Image (cartoon, rainbow, N blue to C red; front, side):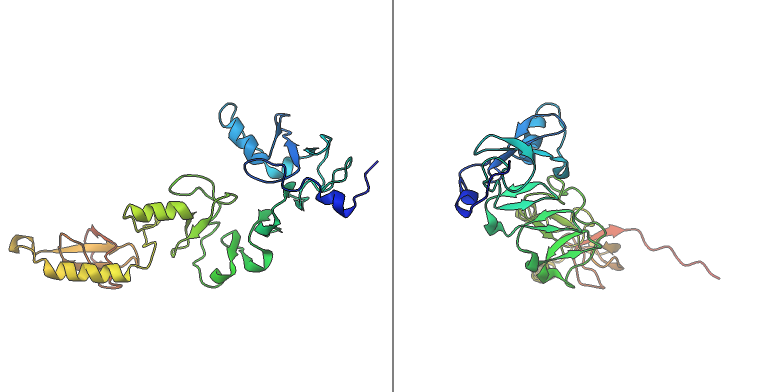
Length: 265
């Protein structure tokens, strides 16, 4: 018989239990292997060392209350001792968390729970994920941009626990991977090669360096370049420090062959 859930009882044990990923008052039984884990991330990390397989969040059916050790169908309140097994509970994701300061919410379009507060995010249907409101009408949409691996560390981005950065080109990667990339003086998107940040000041500095570095006469010849930023082509004088696009003034360029001559009609 289900216990009467008084307010003090609901709060009992809050923040006293959990795993390295979440504070919660229950463990889960993985239906794929029948083992008990603190959460699905604990399961995925443990099986990665042996029989690698991942546990989809929606597959969880049974949980074990950490206050009274009762195994039961997934629900917010323990059917035996009457505690909240998670201050936040999602019946779709079977997700529990006692730290509600994360402002968890379930996005029906994503199909999973997010953090940060429902009012602070919108779901971009083309990109296929929730983005912060500041990016509404201010980001370049890329079809399902979050549903692929981070181009730096190769972790799947859509349900990653780590913060994600949306580049100016619309592609995505982990925030920390993005900063590590910049620390290694890499300023282009690893996927499309467009500039990942505003490079205006760096291009001005490069203008000064190019002007101050006169090329020997033997190297004063023209080359064709392709711009990774605007996808235009230009014919300019070769320079060892870089080649500036005549269309958008970017130095994010590469040498290429001359455009094919248009055939006479």
